[in-house]
Length: 405
Image (cartoon, one colour):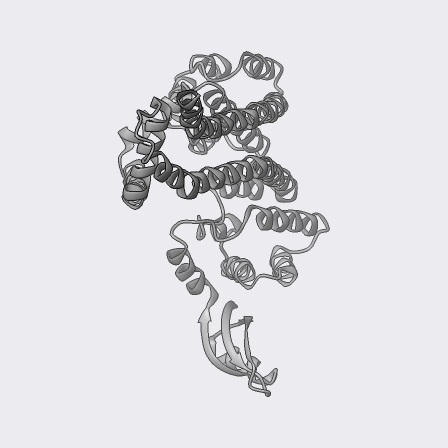
């Protein structure tokens, strides 16, 4: 049985869209007619999802929030002892968005054909990451899929809340920057040109600050559009080179690691993601080397990823995990000690989890510290720029008063 996405018209002539399960397009049309609908277009949901993936330009086909909710529902229903195909059908029925519903029903079709749940997920890499698929596969092999999905749901929800916290924290600084730029634009566009017209009739030398301000205002007015276009083109070529040139991307990532606060935040975020993923995969029964390989692929910073891959090679050659990760010089000492303790006590999964929790707490502190410094920095910079404009406008007036006095 497959999932079909349809466009139909009801008895009143209104357009209807949805997803229906049937063995063939012919049966899907028959079922729609029994519901009083006239089918116009019927297409396999799996094919529809493939078309969507092409249109999405590589972006995830479902949000992190939807993925966390879906995973939690799967885990809850599997814990209740329901068969997998019924669980997928129930989760699809609970889903409001047609796109997500079609995705789940497409996965269910693969399961009904005899494929594993992980294989169904792997057909949609834009929605399900390698971590997600490998962990589900390990859960299926170990017979503890419900427990593994619970861990995945916790992990996905944690990632969602972290991203949401960062986005909310950036709202206030973004508004401040927008308002400050608006004020500066107003001064340069309307106030400064009027002052220039007044000062041009004074007939005396203007202060250096005023001359600089006049030059900035004049150039922005005549070259502003070209500057804006140049910025857009530069950003486009930078992103294109970042995507296509591995050496350039590695160089930029290495440069970011050297920036105070930002570099530390990147290191902590990536090592925490590695530890958390490693813990989830290890608890699901994935072999250590495979777990390290999968976890390293989720590291976004290329120099850190390369170092962790080299550490995995050292483990493959017989070295222990803690000393191999220590040689990367990216993992904090606390995490190395916890991993070493886990190796010696046989509780590696628990210690990896503790290391990840410790690093997540550090990420939160770093974010709070960075934002606490960022907001006054914006105020100081924008205040200095406004002060410069005000002084540049007022200094000629003061000079004129001294001249006439």
